[in-house]
Length: 86
Image 1: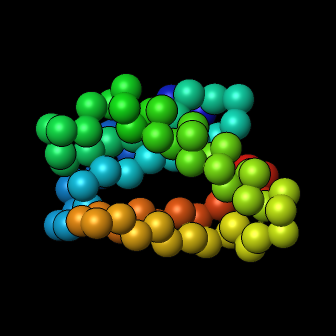
Image 2: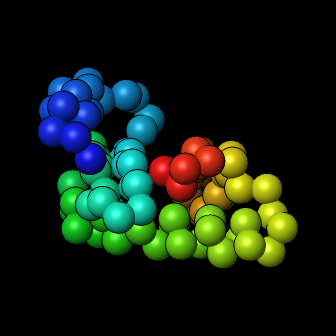
């Protein structure tokens, strides 16, 4: 991913209620940030890569994967996928 995009994302102010965010483009390192000290960058990077793999696998089985919401006991994960795989 471009250095310009990295800088722009790093300067974004925190959003109330958002604990972490990330972008993963296949073939590139994920970019992420967090307001939660319990979510280190390495863990988030693995999450975005794994989530991308799950989305691709689900799409291969006929599921609509452009927009998703995953509910956990105390968190909600929103996913938006572009046609290019990002």
